[in-house]
Every structure is written in C-alpha cells, then in structure tokens.
Length: 211
Image (cartoon, rainbow, N blue to C red; front, top):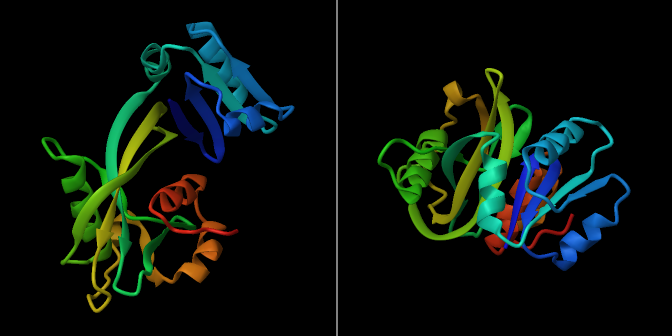
C-alpha cells in the first residue's frame, strides 16, 4: 500500500512496499528515506520538508497501519470530498480560486457521507443543481497550516455528471473567481496552473493528461 501526501508541491510517501515509482524518487539526491517509526524520525522529516532543497520523503514500514498512526498523530485530520464533474461533451469542470485552477471540493459536514459531501460542495461552489455522483475514483492527501496548527486533509473524489446548459455561479465567499468547462486538449494548460494532486485525481478518473 502507498499513501501519497502533498506538502504544497512536495510529496511524502507512506508505504509498506517500494514500487517502481517510489524507487525512482529514492534516487534523487534530495530525497529522504526513513525505515523506522519513531517521533524523532518523523519530526526530523517534517523539519527537512521546510527546506527549499527538499524533494521527496519516503517512510517505509511493513505495517502500514502502524506507520499511518505514527505519522497522523502529528496532524489534525480533516475529512473532505470533491468531484470530477463531466458534461455531455466529456468536458471537465474547473474552478479558479486563489490563483490556481482546482476541482470543486470541501469539508464533510457532521453525519454526512463522503458522496453526499461531494455533491453538496459541487452544487454550492459552482451553482449546478442537477448533479449525479458515480464511483469513487481516488483519495488524496495534502497538508496545510491553519491558525498555527498542522492540518492533514483527506479528500475522497467521485466521478460526477452534469449538463452544460445549467448556469454556473461561482461561490464568492469561498473566493472562487471563475468556473469553466474545459475540453480534454485544454486540460494540460489548466494543470500547469493547478496543484500536483489534481493531476493525480484526473488520471484516476480516466482523463488522459499529457503535459
């Protein structure tokens, strides 16, 4: 099992196996490999992540659940969900917020399933009314700081369908400035001005991305 966690654009892998992809990362001179579960080791990694030269972190243990528990306790965990929304022309819905192209998503409300959250957030952030959610495509992880606290956000993503004749209304109080249906040939341009995990989400949704 491999869990990929983004610290801004820098990945940290929690894993119980060394895949071909991880093996490639390990050969980078600024990658850090840790094969022990201890608070000092994890704190050391978190310290190194802040350095500009840091490239990748790899934490390996044959007990992935034990590894997750040891790593997660350094963060406040937040559950969220979002959607890869496609229309009848197979275009993908993007939102523009805080200088980045993104996909609609948000935090789970209490007693709300991930799929229910994803649909609600898509409706609230885009103004779409008729939205149907399909299968889950992936889960992403990223970290940020909020009021001095370290947050780890776990986001479940779902394939969704909506028709393009519906009116799109950006949710201004969430700082969303623009919403666009984007055809597949134009998606790479959006990805260049997006977050690394968004490319992972689209690939898992079956979108062929060539940047």
